[in-house]
Length: 164
Image 1 (cartoon, rainbow, N blue to C red):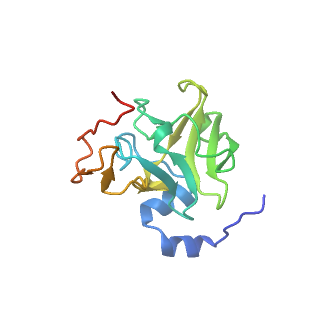
Image 2 (spheres, rainbow, N blue to C red):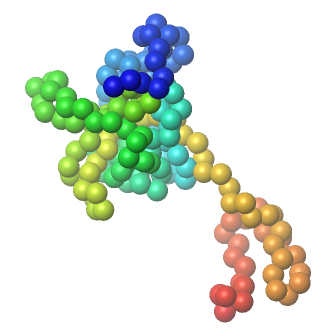
């Protein structure tokens, strides 16, 4: 397959941390329960640490108990590619970034519905970006003609005609 982003190992080593390089480019694995995103609860998108391509959405993340960030599907069908992996005396399915070929982790057939798949991904292969805030303005005008300031408090709820 022709990659959209191609660099030599030397070029990757210059742009990644040693841990990121070992995992994403040399197909390493971080120890279970040690990755930055294992217990991460942010709302946003996970991208390839190598090329920045969006790979996974936090809406598809769940706690598998495996010790690695787990997702039941990629952000899009085109985001990742899968290859047979027979290393370490096992037969697994490796997950790679479709854009640059970075090693992400493995996918297993024991995930939750709706896919039944568990994408078990190394945190070191990912970066995270918060989902952009809603385009709603800080002050909302309701049918009573008054501005109701939210004061940056997302827990504050406002009643509209539709809610009552």
